[in-house]
Image (cartoon, rainbow, N blue to C red; front, side, top):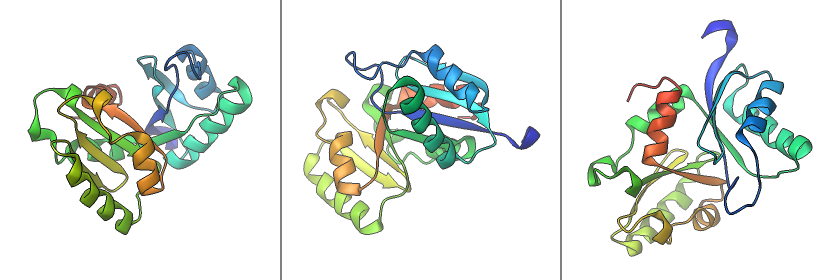
Length: 186
């Protein structure tokens, strides 16, 4: 870890979707640079960024959320993970063997681990969503959605209500692309 910085991955929920919460990625990169982030890169136009920062992931997420509101007038949840946390998410997917199609696997990133009783209740409830599958592992919810994410009833909104945490989803292809961008071995 050179200079006290570590690679961080930032996920903004609901930006550039359907014309709402417009955040040009060039503006996001400039905003992150203004927060003393280095080696800033973005992926796609949907609020995915990788950078190096001396801040802890939760502190960086809070700072980015505040800066988005104050500088760009956009208020959206921001979830952050360190490179090490991202590697654990990739390595720990219990549903990865269910399909070869990365569009049918998703990770819902929470802003922290849910209470154990809430996670257990959600996993029990999710049995009724078959053939969809769900697994809560720490601050991550893994989904397998055979009909595609656009058809699932296991939405961010439902997961947030059941788990009491902020949630933002990414498909497995994006998870792996961000891992590559962050230098995570997969």
